[in-house]
Length: 353
Image (cartoon, rainbow, N blue to C red; front, side):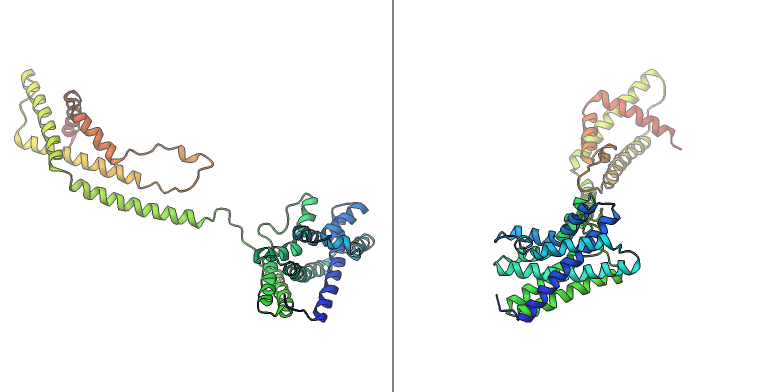
């Protein structure tokens, strides 16, 4: 770790203690709005101003927590609570001061947390985490203790992102032997990003249904289905000749049995060769349409992912082309079932114009 200019250390020190006082006042003001008594003022002020540093020091686990070993931190936090108790800060001016003061203090504390982590030789990611915890840990502890959702979570003004930027810049400065530069530039960048969120209404988006992996996988599945359907269509065209010949023979034999039966009963004359050929062509067309409609039904399956609500089980799964062909072949292999099939197809054939 490179040496730091005493002036920068002094600025950090005064900014740190000033931030504790300001955050104590902010915490006390929040306690007033929530209707807390003086005890609530003290606790909320302490959590707001010292919580992040406490979390940082406990996680680093090197010596006593700074807020306990240096009593001026507690004095300043409680002084802020008393100020907020005796002075009712409210109105647009106070909201402006609070928002901008919070942005400035958070940027400085992110740099302080990163520098302390670097001092104790923590790796890269933990150093960034220490900067984030120092900057935002107090507000999270305060919100949780008040039974509120932490403000840093979900669709709010960015506070974690500026802290990450500050800690990263401090780390880069330390890596190149320019820690002092990083300690100045890092907080300035963090403060700028936080103020940008205030001025421009910048929010961290929270899209609950956004899942690019699922969307991409669903598109791939659709493309795979289309390719599968094309291959099945080609497969039907290249279907072995012996299979089609066997089906024709089974249908012709069943048709012959029907015509002989009708001739014996005197219901009608035998069908001509042209009628038999027309009927067989109609049968082939029906088989092809059955396969095509089955494939198109299967192409509508585009869902991907886990179904936690259970709606995906509300519809029946379509029968596949292979299952339809196996079912047809099973019918044709049985003379009785084939005769029933001929009866149904003949009724449809005779009803056509």
